[in-house]
Image 1 (cartoon, rainbow, N blue to C red):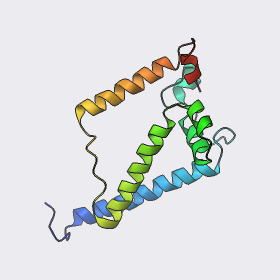
Image 2 (image 1 turned 30 degrees about the vertical axis):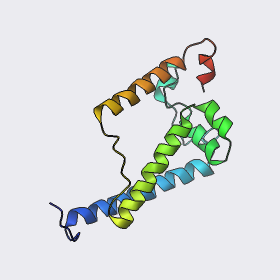
Image 3 (image 1 turned 45 degrees about the horizontal axis):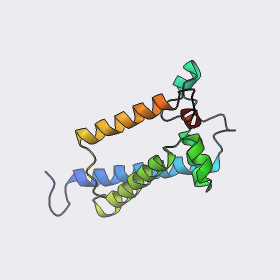
Length: 143
């Protein structure tokens, strides 16, 4: 159990891990901002795309984040229509980790409910299927 004064080891460990996580995520964002995933070879290629030629729901996200970090919203949307959704979610997560590290508690958002996870999975599956259909307007979603 946690003590009210915050003297137990668990909250301190959580705060250190939150700081480490926020630092790692900020570093990853910096790498994506500084290096173009289209030209640099150290970014991984999607295994599903490499083997089958089909785009998974995440295909184009790294390139889309690079474009978004450089202010090119239309290019980001062209690479992956869900880029802004993942950007907002990632920003929320980083801010929450920073607040957890600094003040001992992060932002409150009760998204860990089974129906929300189910909705997320359905949206991702539908997006993954629709973006691979070779007919207009779905072929616009292909990265």
